Image (cartoon, rainbow, N blue to C red; front, side, top):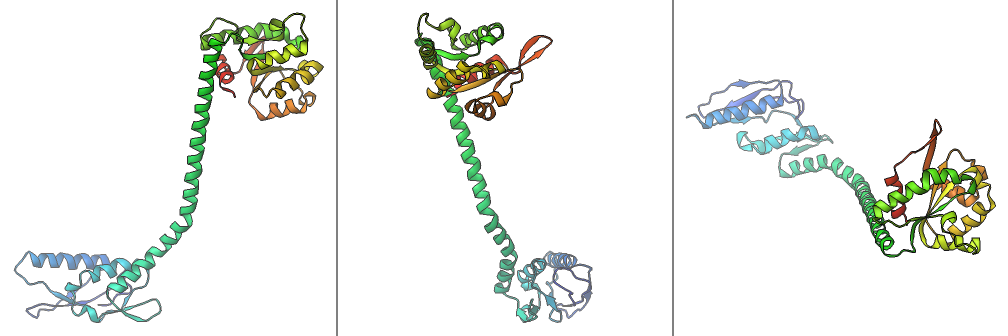
Amino acid sequence: MFLRHCHYLQYFYISVVMERDHKGVLSSGTEQGLQKRITDYMEYCRNSSEKGPVFDILSNKIICYACEHKSTVEWLFYRKSYFYRLSELRWVGQSGRLLKINEHLVNSLNDACLRPTRITLATILPFVLLLFLTATVCVVCKRRKALARLQTRENRIAELQVYNDRFAVFLGYNSEDYNFVHDNVDTALNLHLQTIVDTDRCLVCTGDNNFRLGRNKHEDTIRLIQQSYVVVLVVTDSFCTSNFCCKNMLSYVFNEKKPVIVMLNGRVNENTMPTILRDCFNKNTRIVWSEVDGQYILKTTWTNVCNSILETY
């Protein structure tokens, strides 16, 4: 029998030594075909009165050093009872040396075949673990932030229901934008906040509505900002060019470390914004109005605006 290599057999011849000294020739085009024919024949012999044969393959040259040879090596080794003097069979290793077929050879070939997989796993596993840990940390952080926002919202609703001197939002704007704020923002924002908080008192404070008459304007502005959870600034070109809005009000807001949400009405020249406002404008998301056929349209929903106000901390 001649094997070109273990994985693929072109032509081979097997002399079969039977108990009755009957000899024959068996041939197949592939090693898998040989394995099947031998296995089927042995099964046939077990189920019949004939004694099983012993196959003689000592004259064969078998190459065995690569992973594609592994299945044939294992098949022959674990069926050695089928073959005549299999222990005398020699395999041609990668170096050209003749090797005995034994358990050590099978294990060596298994180790050689598994080595690339082990190297790949050893290389990839740390990155997979790092990716998994990163994803886990991100998920945990997001959940914690979501829980923190929810807790902030519940706490503020509870406090707004109890303390009448607290406001959900301080609405800051320039007097030139009064008509826009009064017609589109102030009333609508207050009504939606009242619905969520479940109260009928005013939750939006402005200088025009809540200043105490005859008091210092700067001090009263600070008081209202302190009594509010969030500051919403209606930013327009007139707001940016106003000394009181851009210098005094902004300094009060950031000195008190209040969360700020920017509301835009139309296009605003960023170059006119103070640095601290421009940073907030570029860094954070904002409420945007657009004008269509003389009507102002809010690009989000009032529910989203109110929840953002109640959850921002």
